[in-house]
Length: 489
Image 1 (tube, rainbow, N blue to C red):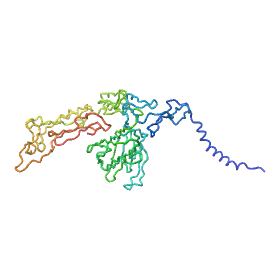
Image 2: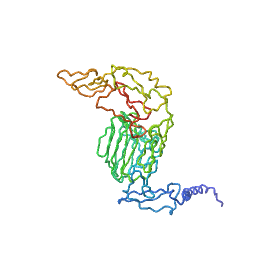
Image 3: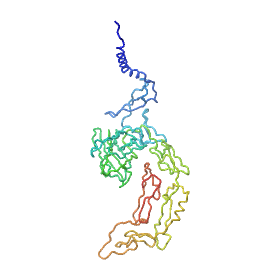
């Protein structure tokens, strides 16, 4: 009797499919590239330190695209003692296990590491970001993005080459995991919204047992100085410097940010300008100089800023001068075309001496704001000169009078001023109410000095503020000068 073989066809197909599932991965693995690796194909790394403060040095393939033959991978070696460090201006070449000088165009802080720029595709090793619903305000059903970079949904993320926090209804936490071989610190320099009132942040440090030993809490930007941290800022300042002490061993720094939905606005922002961490073993490689800086020597411990109207690319050994029709801001990697002058590039210069008998002292002259950036092709300064006006001397401040030389001076002890013009004794049985009341900004009372500083938005720039004048007197008021440079005065 003949059998119908067609009924076995589905069974054969099923068996063949099972065979592919089982043996196809083995076939793929067997076809993976195996090569004799050289030093350029390998990465050398240290193991974690053991209880005796020792470690091993081992090699692994640089890429996952190939395997190395067993004989081409060197055997593990005894690594340097975990207490060994390299001085500033040096890095540890792991292959030779020796400290070497940094090349020109780079720098090293030795047992410290500095973060100023961040890659848009990944965070540095040890960094992580987590966004979660804010249950304290009933937002437990809120969906929070898990993207780490360029999410556009707020919270901590990398925008361009900067790590920053922007408004989000979620709780956003930046975590930094560190292993220190000796006590050190973490120093944050950051910019925060000047009028921030609804931003709630918690910066704390935990040890290997996840126990807090360095809490720093701020709800309304009010900080208390404790043993383990320092915080430097001026009232209302945008840029702040904060330092946390760290212990030897494993540390976890967390910076958690949330917003009060009643007090906050969507303009809440924090931008990390610079993060320095000390107490590390060594620098595995030297850091390239940021844009607008350079290092021309071997073993640089820091990078020098470029001069006025100079620029440089990342990792430069020298700066380049901009063409005459272009200019560059501090810490800039490019030049930009000089704009045509407008009235914003000039300021009214008022004389500090005002003598009623000398009418020339009433004149207000227009001067160009330094550094001079714009090009006056349209004769803007000539048009402003035609608008020069003469004003009468404004009264001196309370408790002062104008002397014969035209200066405002304090009244003698026991006297008060009348409308800032003359001084008279107090009535019998009364004494003056002493104090300093400034209403005339043409001349500042003796003993008072106005401090002028610039906080550059691009990065920290050492040296004096090049903007002059930074504050302008309008007689009865004082205003910060408008400038084309990205600074805060």
